[in-house]
Length: 171
Image 1 (tube, rainbow, N blue to C red):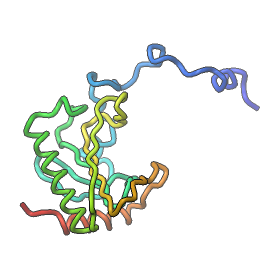
Image 2: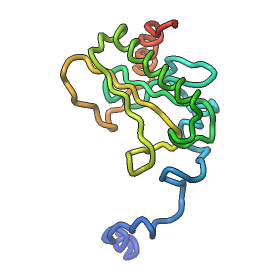
Image 3: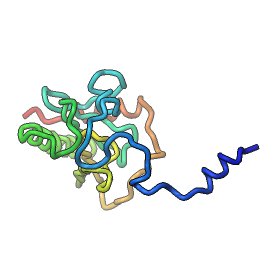
Image 4: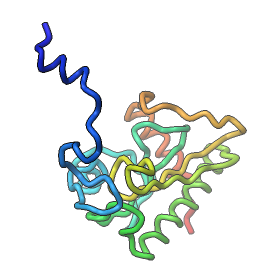
């Protein structure tokens, strides 16, 4: 049996943004959430299927690939929330990694196109407040993307990471 308080919560309209409880900043400015999943990956607290890593960036498979071979690129510096916080060198390293990811997707998967996506602030669709670049390959004209409910197993992610690593450009 539900309590009256629980029923009131279920039937109440959502709170306006100004009424919502304080939490991690979701706009373009605010405090960095050191508990975000990318910070945890960088600290070695969460497993990751790594494709590439250097002193500035980490490239890995997201838990849900929008298309087979979809990768995420994150700068390794903690404390940055979005593109506006990156140094020009970090931004350049992310874009060079995106270019190499596209080349690896072509070589390993036969990609005939790819998308680069990067969101800043919750109003633009950013969900994890650490900058990240999505590189999503396409093979042929099918534009349909998988949903977040379609998670991959660690074995599937590791296998795809290995394919992309083997095709990763050396220069």
